[in-house]
Amino acid sequence: PNIFADVKDDYWAKDYVAFMNYHGVVSGVLSNGKYHFRPADTITRGEFAVMVANMLNIDTESFKDTSSEMADEDRTPAWCANHIKALCELGIMNGKELENKLVFDFGAPLSRAEAAAVISRLLPENLPAEEKKFTDSKSIPTWCKDAFTKLTTLNVISGYSDGSIKPLNNTTRAEVIKMLYEVY
Image (cartoon, rainbow, N blue to C red):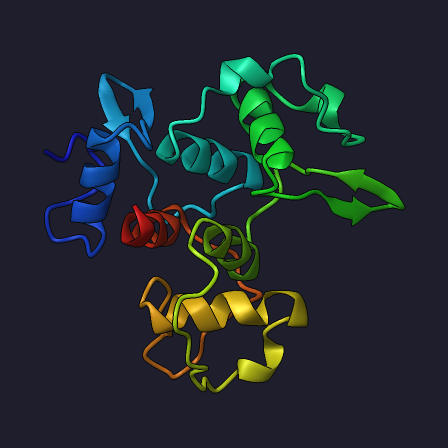
């Protein structure tokens, strides 16, 4: 069942959101007595870390005394801190360099390239993959080209109606849920 007031019955990702909520991957936000998912909002790196850790059923509490070794670790909020530590420790997510420091940057928007890189790490390595051409294929960063090849072959990520893949665009919460659903 769909519990979210802002995910209407005719919304393209309704079934993905409802399924992932039912399985504890997402919970939404309670506001004015109703749960909201905010499907069109850009997802942050911290929110994505929570979803991935939830999907993998990681006991994030067991990572509370682990250091992520990120320069912004002391500013990371409790709701995502252990999830981030777990995913970094397990090699599923990485930090990024910002002002000559390694940070996780939990509040930063997650790009489609970053989502692809992380989600491809959740899959076996030797899956068949065939590079698909998109109008903006040249804008796919080298560090995630293999991830896009794998995920587009498996239809985990698809292009847009204009023939593009938009790897550098920010990812919405609904897009991420659809991608995670496909590998669940």
